[in-house]
Amino acid sequence: MTIKEQPKPPRFRIIANILLSVSGLFLLLNLFLPGLFASGPAGVPYSLFIHQVQEGEVSRVSVGQNQIRYQLKTENAEPGAVFVTTPIFDLELPKLLESKGVEFAAAPPPKNTWFTTLLGWVIPPLIFIGIWQFFISRGGGGQQGVLSIGKSKAKVYVEGESAKITFADVAGVEEAKTELVEIVDFLKTPARFTQIGARIPKGVLLVGPPGTGKTLLAKAVAGEAGVPFFSISGSEFVELFVGVGSSRVRDLFEQAKKQAPCIVFIDELDAIGKSRSSNGFYGGNDEREQTLNQLLTEMDGFAAGDATVIVLAATNRPESLDPALLRPGRFDRQVLVDRPDLSGREAILKIHAQKVKLGDDVNLKAIATRTPGFAGADLANLVNEAALLAARNQRQTVAQEDFAEAIERVVAGLEKKSRVMNDTEKKIVAYHEVGHAMVGALIPGSGRVEKISIIPRGMAALGYTLQLPTEDRFLMNEEELRGQIATLLGGRSAEEIVFGSITTGASNDLQRATDLAERMVTTYGMSKVLGPLAYQQGQPAMFLGNGAPNPRRAVSEDTAKAIDSEVKEIVEKAHEQALQILKQNRDLLEAIATQLLETEVIEGEKLHSLLSQIQPVDKATAGSVAS
Ligand code: ADP
Ligand code: MG
Ligand code: ZN
Image (cartoon, rainbow, N blue to C red):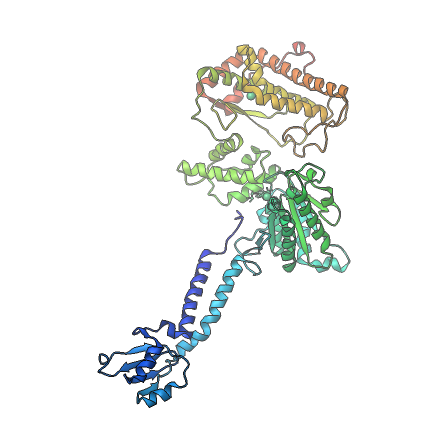
């Protein structure tokens, strides 16, 4: 189920309210000030009327509350003409009229039917309700729908029929769910816990990579507990004007306490909660620090037994958070929301596939197998991409092949058929990719080579080799890591063997190979020379294979040299290994590359049978390579 980030109250309701208010106002005026809207002959100044009376020109007068209508004697005006003037409170008027012998009478009171009475009594309250609702729906303090909180900009999702998200909408993060079920209990029946004297946790930190469903989980907690959900993003707190951030925090908690029990959700907590020692985004950290302090104050402020406000926060960089935030009584609970495993991915695909029409041949399990490392958001996106492809291909339902194509799109970016390579470049790219594929096919632990293509994709790759893992891997041994490095160097090695020169196309491969080698030495302790020491600062990247290595710990010059030479050694050995594999299978390299140049893509069974012809390197010549 998709969540609209900011459900709006139905627009027509606002418009209806405005219309009601305007027409009501009109009626109101009409009822109470009929004079204003009186139609008829143009008004005559009262002074002129008095003058006319005194001169004896007036024949008849009808005195009403808001209006005097009169006729002149026939010699002064056309017969039947009626003049109107607005009266002034004038007690002398009857006497004057009498003394001048004018015929006069009070005008009959306005016809007050039951209908107008009803309108008079019913419409004004309706107008006020209308106006009130109008402001409620844009201001704050009501009970339904989305209210935005004055200064704090927090969006509030009150439990509603349409947008209700529950744990059933979240899959693949079972451990996180189990922990959060407890939070739901706290929100539903706080008394049960406080009775025994237990302190209800105030803060729960959801930690995990982007797109794994942290926001979704927080909403699900609110939905399960049936409580209001205040949501604000950390970056929204941080404003240029000093003091705004902290006043927003204060404001937010004030509002939340009024609606307790409820959930306050702070997305991107790291934007305000960054460690105070680390260098800030804005030269001076004053503002962020004040905001952070205010947050800490607020969290310390609401005591047990008070209103139950539970603060959920999300971050993908827990290591950068200020330790003060993680102390007991603040965010003392941390829930890991990690990328889903195989069965988790299948479950997530199931949830999102409900929205599209699936063909009979679709096998969600097979799709899950091919998408390790995908987060929930990626899978949701994948289902949508597949549906778009099916629609573009004029299909009525989404087929398995749509999913296959969608996976490639998500993995490698959109196919760029328009980019034209010249023939030499194409040839180089072909050998390069076949080099990757052949080394990869012979190396343990790096997955099965499923496709080689020299159709450029995305921004970076001119060609690409798609290796799909046959299973989820969480641990890798040294040999497999060396194998991965060799596979990365396979492209460049092929270029060397075939053309005797190297192009710029391998720079990304080299970057990744070097990073991996460095991590082997400085993080995983895989170097015999340097021993099982961690030479990098901070925790190792939480999610395997993410980004560059951390900055190095301060090391002696000798150690730095040793690290450099070890890294170099690993990369060079892997390079050697790749070269040997390719040299030994030189003919096959030619054959596959020639075929690739013709068809541009080789995949599936055909590729498997080609790659199965590779001869492993003779142990005799390989020497110490596979250590
Ligand atoms: P995060 O806050 O962790 O960055 P979101 O909660 O915003 O991720 O996830 C974005 C979208 O991806 C969700 O709205 C949902 O459609 C989908 N999604 C992410 N994780 C899951 C999951 N575990 N189960 C089902 N859908 C998910
Ligand atoms: Mg989010
Ligand atoms: Zn390459």
